[in-house]
Length: 152
Image 1 (cartoon, one colour):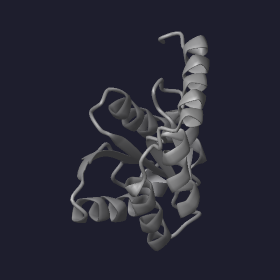
Image 2: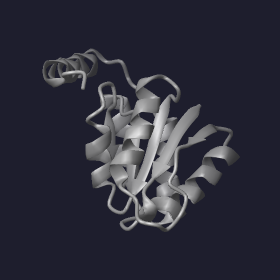
Image 3: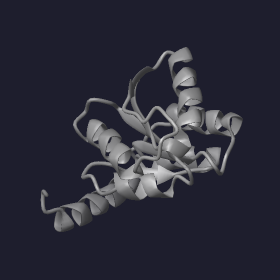
Image 4: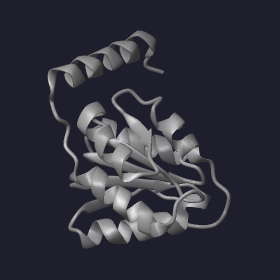
């Protein structure tokens, strides 16, 4: 699977760990930055990852910032992105199975590298169920997105 990965300065160390994990498990990664401790703005990296997923350049996206909240808010502004903050394996798996989450957001200041690795593995192993109720709900999300999207 090809995965776009991005982080702000707070997420860089965890991003590096997760890139190594993804590559060791045979995934192709698209590293969209940032790479150092200098302060940067999370919306820039959330946008880059979200756009890569929305354009089909990556099947999924992974974002890391201090809390995971900012990147999830920013990524969800992009049509076609279904970003979710997760700090446990259940919500990471269930988010894909029920809500077709395509961008996972993690908080580097909230969880450690071992838990992050477990969450990422659960998220990557999960597949959208395709059950009628979940398809119906995704349709409603897309309708909301279409109503408010102005193509800016």
